[in-house]
Image 1 (cartoon, rainbow, N blue to C red):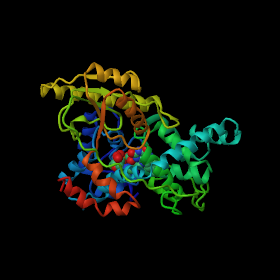
Image 2 (tube, rainbow, N blue to C red):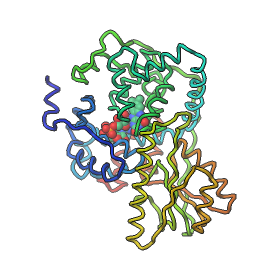
Image 3 (cartoon, rainbow, N blue to C red):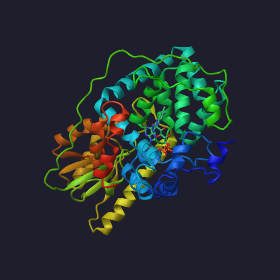
Image 4 (spheres, rainbow, N blue to C red):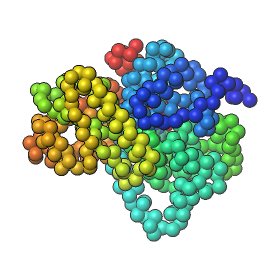
Length: 422
Ligand SMILES: Cc1cc2nc3c(=O)[nH]c(=O)nc-3n(C[C@H](O)[C@H](O)[C@H](O)COP(=O)(O)OP(=O)(O)OC[C@H]3O[C@@H](n4cnc5c(N)ncnc54)[C@H](O)[C@@H]3O)c2cc1C
């Protein structure tokens, strides 16, 4: 009863994830007054799909940078000071922390992909593993809350943060399924599915990120934070030991931000990793724009049609906005939609537009980075220069994401000052 009163003021609020920057900004404007003490007090409650009034639900837009972290922080800090919105601000920085951490240890992503691929192959012959996996993803395990959330994820493309923690914990420690298969299931269906946030969160739950420290879902916590909608008492393994893995991952230095060459006739390649062209640190406007088709897979994981459609529409929306901006600035940069993620299509576009160089927002560790590293050589061989631009936010955050979150957390006030946000 006591918890119910926390939510009385806002009433129910179902979120529809419309794939446009406008819709993301509208959600941000709506959430802004709730980002202070109310968020800190209520954010751990999963009130169900009909009521998302206690969290921002901004992650699908932030994932594609249709709305940037900087914009989110700016809006919130216009209403609250850094202490009043401390909890929410920290959550936003968790994303930068995971992105930066994976930049330092890209082998974690590549090992995850290899292990997942091996598990996918194993399921072709291991009937027990395959049956238990199918029961989990189809919501037939008999653990009511888990089964409900599996269906909710597939239907909506979103799960509340606390639910993700419970779900991953039950997957690993109660159902005894490999964490990589669960992380793959999330990547397939989450609108915000992200190589860094997803892989590292699953590892965090399992006890691999902070070695030896795992997250165990407890039935009483689930009952309390779902306000009694679920109570898996007696069904969960609440005493499991953390996962363990052999070896350590080599820490690679960050790729330093590239220095921009003399302004030339360059084309901007837009990918699903960073769609907000207007806020990219470009010294001169591009002569032409091209949309890289959204990847249908992420590593060995096929993405759901819902995820592909969402990201594709966000990119089209971004391209339309860039075209309007170009017309307003009388630069008239044409925007092409590439038919394929291939060197041939990129080179044809660059030659058609008489470009000297192809530029893109520095793609973070994941499939778009892998594509870029490969295609760069093809573009260079065709006589085109290639460059990336790194946002200042990433430049300020990533160097501190080498160990635990605390190291970055201490730097948040300085970073906000450097960004002129406080
Ligand atoms: C197992 C597991 C898998 C996850 N997979 C993803 C993923 O693929 N993509 C993803 O963006 N987040 C992931 N998260 C983090 C978190 O659950 C979501 O970012 C959050 O639930 C999104 O909802 P929201 O926008 O309402 O968050 P809010 O609570 O409103 O937070 C605001 C923003 O801060 C960022 N954020 C908040 N919490 C986290 C966090 N713990 N880690 C990283 N960023 C955070 C998000 O961009 C979010 O939109 C995962 C967490 C777990 C436990």
